[in-house]
Image (cartoon, rainbow, N blue to C red; front, side):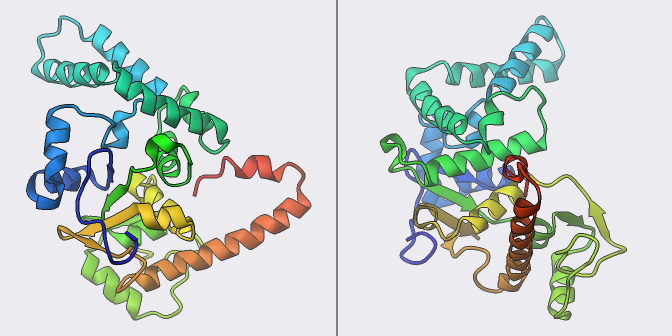
Length: 285
């Protein structure tokens, strides 16, 4: 059971890796348990080990536009980017890739929360978040035999949990944030309902990070047996428990309270406003 010991102690071919990209690269090339991922990437193997390698239609269109617009350019940056884009486009032109893509895209199209990933024409953080969460849902909740053996490795290194929970970026160091958090038992903030620490002068509103969306999705679905057994967290090069277990559990308790309050509000709104369920399917948390 990856949420708890015994852990899944290495990356296996077909597994997916989530986390901050710099940390993913470090794990692949520096952490012995991810040694098989080096071969996977160097040989452009299938299925993709990163969700970013599952290109949605809008990404393919953008890549093709770039290749057309930069054709003949002598700019070193364009030449480098052309090489990378060409590799990505060649990677998806393969029967082994297509069978996984068809399973993933078919799952998205059947789910109202994720169907827009394959049809939207504007590329933004919301769509990327749905793509990443939708891939997690596909791996962990979908019952397609093709993906039965696929597990997900989530690297926690470099992630500030206060920012994940509050959906803010904080202009302070992690040690200071932790000290302020544990010194205040009643650390709710009326402006956004669940900022864990009182940092009115130091917080900066920012677009929600993709990794934050991913972790919150896992927390909301942690009671699902498949989610609990198919996601393995990593930190400091070793398997570990979920981030809501241990020293940072109180931070996640605040998010749990937020979800509880939100659930009660949804019930009230469902009773008061016809069609509310249609709206809430597009709500981004």
